Image (cartoon, rainbow, N blue to C red; front, side, top):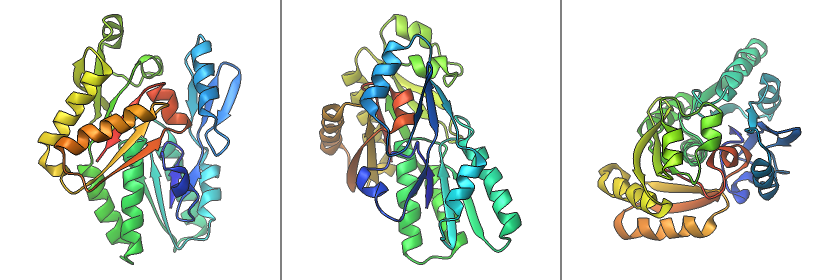
Length: 274
């Protein structure tokens, strides 16, 4: 399975042969970071803090996806971050068209996760689970697509600056909330656009609101919860304990943000999906 590097799989999962990550790139000032195994989160956070301009991210070129398609798999499942947030999905689609011209019998599907980070992780694990059952290609695609449609993504950030500067907060009054030091609880629409779900005066209160929403959502029962954190492992474990007291997830997976998610979650950010 092929994922873009906004899919924040754990290091152990990334070492498995089931997953192949195609890196996006990040520019901070004059410095370029490739979001691959060489990524240094502490260095990126420091550079973003020191740089006066917003970091810029670039999606993979179609050629990078084409290289990944040559992995030898019979069925190619590709998962990208929301098409409304990045050109990664469009790039993968272009690569698919080129690949099929040379390999007309190939089976390739590009999933628009309509999410990012923890949401991509859940979709990747679901696709692997379905494929491991030996289900036909189209069955895997249809069931994984249904899973994606029903998935919920939420996040709480210490700062919205990078999202605002890069135009990912369409319609949000991030300048006002920043001035008032309000912490927003954000979510993703079914189409993959960011929207506001609540607000609080502290991250802890915003996370409590997040848990409250999850506990009232009957659909969460029996599902896997993925928590991605940006340099705040203790906060992620605190959230895990809060969730365990009032929710009924089958399991809780904690992972760390890679380069792209680090840019937008920023230091102290938490992203969840179920």
